[in-house]
Length: 349
Image (cartoon, rainbow, N blue to C red; front, side, top):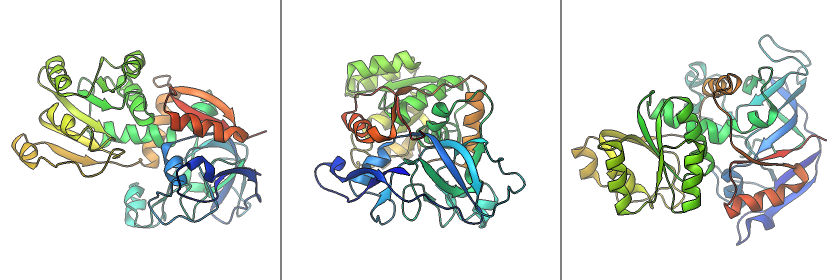
């Protein structure tokens, strides 16, 4: 099968570590399923892997990719177990791998499994390939009418945004949220999901064109990230937002704390500009702010996202769809940062 792999890590050019080549087809074991990958989307996680950054020690070669939608080809034990999608069924893959047996897994909270992992991090395969083997419990059937391209956008960026908004942020219709990054993968997903959930969404970006794009997506307004913009946000919201979604870290931390209303929440799921901003504990305790960490989402949360899309309430923003063999070009566009929406690869011939 054709696959996109990291064959080394680090260096000044992450794309120098990328290889698109034929490798052996995978074989499912008992409890696993073999899929034909019909669509797979890119995430910044893929670039971090090429740079040698991961949540666990990396080894090479490693197939990249966290997100996939595809068709069920075979089960490892030869039989379709009760509750599993039939051979030929269209599915989306939950990217979070867990043991399936501990208390957290049995309670539907697999993110707290002591053995939690992610597709494309050793020892698990990635999704940027023509074929994929995953545990059968990680499949979610796709309703009729929900296409593979849409489904392939959901398991990382959109799921992360959904959990930040609904679960960790506790946002409900009518509440106000500010999203940093405007057109980044998680940020654009948060704008679209927030609007679908009846939220008033604000966005930030240093780039004027990206601020305009955020408003096109559905943000009520978009702001720069300087001190004057803090006053503008507070004025526009009548005292501050209920929740800030921050994936940026050091560069936006002061801004995030200042635009919150008293009792508000900052939900953090990344720190692309650095993980150690001044904490400002006095501001946090005096204004009774909450700092909530968030990462990925559960299988049940992904299923709710699928339902939102099937009901026509959410349509992921797609920049372009490219063949798997052009993965290097797609990665180059991801690095450049001038895309608008998700980059999707179609591995199947």
